[in-house]
Every structure is written in structure tokens, then in C-alpha cells.
Length: 110
Image (cartoon, rainbow, N blue to C red):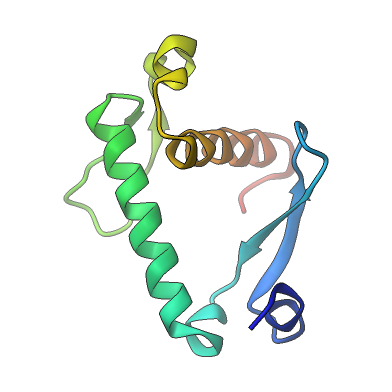
């Protein structure tokens, strides 16, 4: 299943444009759970892993015992040396968290 199929089935929708690369960004909708449950599970597992890493490095604050915790950025989330030490995928997740915060600031909640 490719990106176009996921968009047509309502499981993926445009989320913006990456300011660094100019590439289109997408976000999954709740429909991904029906359309491709395996992909939904893998993406959730990856995000959970990245969030735990960021939390362990004190780059984000959250109550890890909550099912759907509120996430806040810490000072370390803006420490360029620490950001540079992150795995590329984890650094991208942090970048996306920041982008989502900025988007919400200007456009309201997701």
C-alpha cells in the first residue's frame, strides 16, 4: 500500500511542508487503524520508543504512567549539542513535536 492509497482511503492527510526540505508532510488519521493495522501498530511503537528516548534525555516532560500524557518541552529540547547527538529519526521526532506546538500556537489545537 503506498501513500496515495492511504490518502484516498482517508488514513493519511497532509500536515504541512517541511521548512528544511520543502517536502510535503503527512499525518495519520484514526482511520489508519482500520486501513492498515500493522502499519498503525509499527508507527505507534516507533513513536513510543522515540518519546521514551526524549524523556530519558530530559528533552521532554511527561507523566509516562498516563495513557495519553501531556507533553512539554524542556530546556534540553533546545540544546543544539544534545540535539546533534540524537539518532536521526529521534531528532526528526523532536523536530515534529516542536512543529506541532508551533502549529497549535497559531492555528489552535490539532
